Length: 501
Image (cartoon, rainbow, N blue to C red):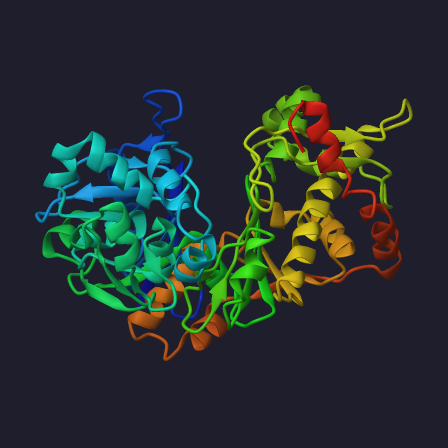
């Protein structure tokens, strides 16, 4: 028997099939484009995305005939929600988190007592969340809003279209601003305040619960057995944490992709006053009894891509022609020790604690003797300084981290992981499978499908460790000295950009 994990992202989806022993039987991925009908708007054509997801499932299913699929689950991005009918038809597009619609509702919610709202929702008000966009649809597309049976996030949407009930887990429900995180129920106070009908939202349940079995039509369409269990998935960062084996307080997911995110795990929700200062959110983990927060940078791994495309275009072209990875060549140029460069990695709008929509990055300390390798390492150091600053803020809020599990494309770089371990002063553990979103969904499928007795048993069977990167004591001491120079960069950059401090 085998398990399918599906991971739906902003620009592509991934599907994997695993045996109960952890062997990857098949994998497929598809891409799709973000639609921008006008400035500030960002959507996905939900019908097109669903077609691509089906294609990927069909490809994977065709390779599991000797090891039939017994259960599947879905991990997905947050915020984006799609209107559907009772007949399981897609009625319109999904509005992405960086779509700016819903600002009026955000302003209305900002009028509430911030402590009380945070205590209830675990979030600070922002246009990134999905709920305000639903109110925009109510006010600007009343025909579509009235016609809609349920608004579903992508994990619950895929499950629903496959034949499951319209149910969402707590982590994805949190991305609406409408969840009461402590009661684990939709907040009647918030829904009444903004005028959102409860009946248009899905039911709530713990990730890993069964929400139905695949319909006969979808089983035939996709080439799957008729009794495949559909298991409730989770927000992609939470599913990544499951796929990386982040299962206890003190551990943190460290996702190294185009965006970079640290998600620490803990048992007890910290005091709102402590969390609001660093502007951290609280969200349910995909595993019961645990919570996570997100400290992220939208520049992240894209900074290395920017350097490649700007300063190493010819090398990149040559490497592509020869079937090589140009990053291996570029990272090999880095010096062994810390650089004297100071980089503020605000090359794109920032996440916590500033949420600055007017990015202004800095590279300070350049001389005529600065090498390309030093610049590359300086960029990687600067991004890591940003997250060390975030870890310090988490510590002040009462969230401790003693181990990081790294995932994403950047986790393949030994050199980058060693830099991070040296700056943070903590070990970084790399699993053998670093694209952990689909794996986390497969683990949830295995638990809900009865293949494993618990998430712990599933993770022990499916999550294998590749390597642990320990910090070098001498380099950590040198980075401590340099990190003290990082803090003044942001106010200095604000002064240069002309923004008020």
